[in-house]
Image 1 (cartoon, rainbow, N blue to C red):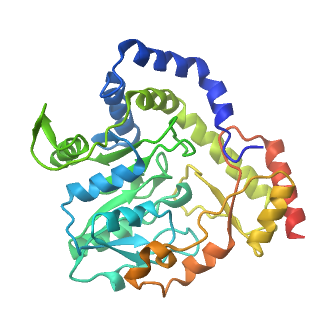
Image 2 (image 1 turned 135 degrees about the vertical axis):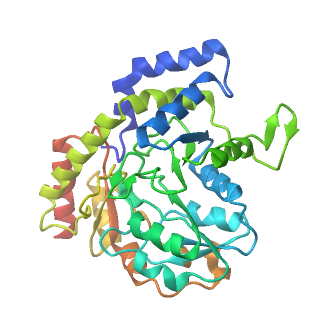
Image 3 (image 1 turned 45 degrees about the vertical axis):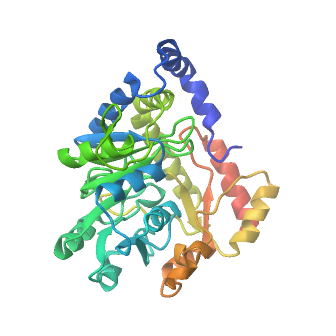
Length: 362
């Protein structure tokens, strides 16, 4: 059994994938080939943003967003205490300061109730993460940001394709970023990412920053990075995007099966009213998590822990001295367990997973 069966997905679309990749091979346009622009148009259309700027990774997308907002050393950026490190590490990499905010105990996303206590005169922006495929309460987060004159950049690395009362993921704030890491709901054959915005001026600057700050060949208006997406990745993602809506439906069917099978077995994820999810992960909460995971492995069931250490307690951020006051993040990090989840998982496989989990919890 696979945690995320990328092989099954490849087999389903193999002819289309090889066809699009062969076009790239025939053209030799490996950098800035036509597939990149075509993908950008399709991505923007899918989520409802005016612009999608494809780039080399979800991490580069975050960095480019910070660069486009002219973040300065010492500026404070609010980020969730419970998520993958990239959200905060790019803030630190850019010599700004990530300020950790505890998360909601039901959705596991940034808790809007905790935001204002963290805002100071040095706060410049907020990067909420749409964790596990479900968006946070962007209506309230945007309202807090507007009240205090802050920008908002959604980190939608796990949620491209999901919706909320505030709109579609990647089109709910001034900017948004996503990742096309292979195991994401929409994943490539390597690293890739994108930045989304409906601000024309911001979009143009992001395109310049992505390509060494170049405004025309060998003329550079400012310092940028090599953050371009390879044409091959764009070709792959075009094919997968064409099937993405169907895959989201399949993921939701799989999540519903897990919900039914796991009733009374473990604490199941909760989808807030008015929200949809891409189910990047199906994550339960259990006691004796590490022991349970070991028992699952012995039964041949893969699992993952997203995430075992809150960001504020990571060694990389020890110098910030922000290692207290995150009760929900601390609790989640000790109990969360992600089960196999992908568009091609079968009902029989899910039944096997749940029976093994029942045995491990007995």
